[in-house]
Amino acid sequence: MSEEGKNHTILLVDDEKDILEFLSYNLTKEGYKVYTALNGEEGVKLAKQINPSLIILDVMMPVMDGIETCQMIRQDLQIEQPIIAFLTSRSEDYSQVAGFEAGADDYITKPVRPRLLVSKVESLLRRLNKGLVSDEKESTLKINRDKFIVEIENEKIILPKKEFELLELLANRPGTVYTREQILSLVWGNESIVGERTIDVHIRKLREKLGNDYIRTIKGVGYTFSEV
Image 1 (cartoon, helix red, strand yellow):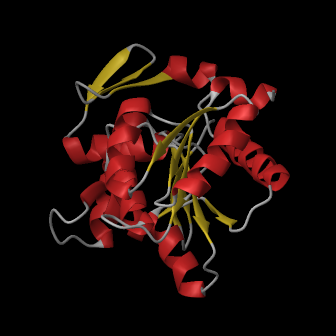
Image 2: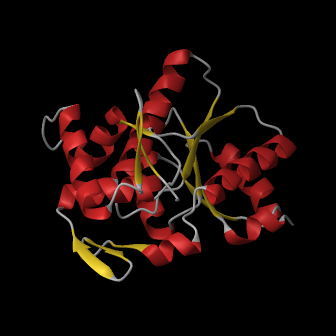
């Protein structure tokens, strides 16, 4: 049993039962707690219930495909954002681009050998661990999702909904760089037509309230949350 598996839950979403059984067997054997869903709609519902560390998604599925499933998970603030990897035999460039634009972190290509699968999963989960906010930072900046309140060194700051959602998106994965297109999709979605300038304004307002240490601009790319 892998030490890596003891503290992680994995959600597998695929419409082929034999693939689910193969993946589930090999990951359970390594100590991971594994849940399965046969389509994207089931996967999204289950993700809300179990908050998995890692989701492995098939791309081509009935009811809701992997791309749409990934987008819904990334846009749902009730879900503690996991690492998402697509399990696919498709190698076309457009599939990869669509997957990463939807918020995927990586790909696992079919067919996959058990040892390679376990190695890949361990690698992905190490990436998640590196993205966690340190205990020292958690004591400095705390985010209260229920009340839209941020607390810095015991000072409470009430944020408007979109500013809060933008901060939560960035802070949930310190060090991850989000492009303006990703931020528009994940925070604003289809609610309204807004431009990239809207993001810049919200970032500026957050910096005015929180200071300049937390949110870094990556020139020509987007923004990231800093663990300074």
